[in-house]
Image (cartoon, rainbow, N blue to C red; front, top):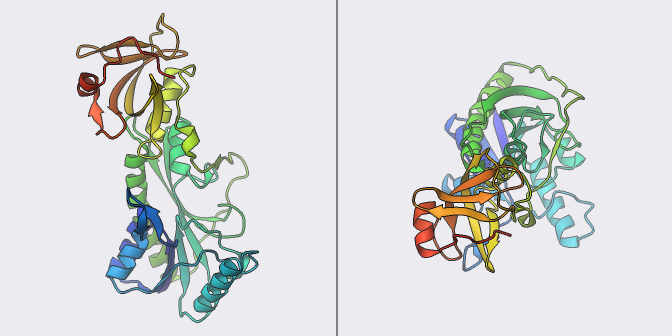
Amino acid sequence: MKVVFAGTPDFAALALQALHEAGFEIPLVLTQPDRPAGRGMQLHASSVKQYAQKHGIEVLQPLSLRQDSADPQRAAEAKAAHERLLATDYDVMVVAAYGLILPRSTLAIKPCINIHGSLLPRWRGAAPIHRAIEAGDDETGVTIMQMEEGLDTGAMLGVERVTIEARDNTGTLHDKLAALGAKMIVATLRKMEQGPLEAVPQPEAGVTYAAKIGKDEAALDFSLSALELGLKIRAFNPFPGATVRVGGTTIKLWSAEVLEADSAEPPGEVVAADAQHGIIVACGAGSLRLTELQKPGGKRLPAAEFIKGFPIDGAVFV
């Protein structure tokens, strides 16, 4: 079976690697254009592009696949990409975290299958892993689905579940789901080689949308409960990183423990900051024990090490 692959970040690169190592012929890879990254803001190739180039696979990086784009450059690149797909001998397109919308013209060329990091129809959209943790879900998983024009609305070809552990953050859960998705897509294509697969329509009940994570969500509001704040800290690790301001300095919070006991102090006030208790902050309900923090320009540090260089006893987080 010949596979055109479309994807961009690490989540997708692991699936591409699995397909390549399983022996599927991959004549073409689509990925997002190189983006500025790092302190020098130099152009950086996506994880998918890096893997493809390392293994001699042709790469296309159109700005868009929509030929009706009002931007002439985007429209021209979309037309060129469409013509390249038409000229490519392939059986199926596999899509994983590509980041571009596939228009009807692309979907109509060959079957398109998506690897989605949630239990559809829950958490359709751009940030299913973040939102599952933020919402306090007990489980999530990977859905392999047929692609159609709707946002993650296609019929399901396979579903596997994963428990969200109490210490999971977006980074650790991402890695679990990426590995699972890679395994599932290989198994799905192997079955497709034997004949048509059963496609199960998504349930109409339980639809939720996972909006893209914005940097403006990083700032924490300590009038919320400790439980809500603890979930946000886990959900925003590693991106964008939950933040608070202390005396005009922005600090990132990377991990915390939820304490159920309410504090007599107002929300945001540091109740304790010492080697014995760690850093405990009052919340709208309950308290948070902060366990890993980072000041600007510094490294992530355990609380006991952090307070040696950044005293915050009696401070207020805003």
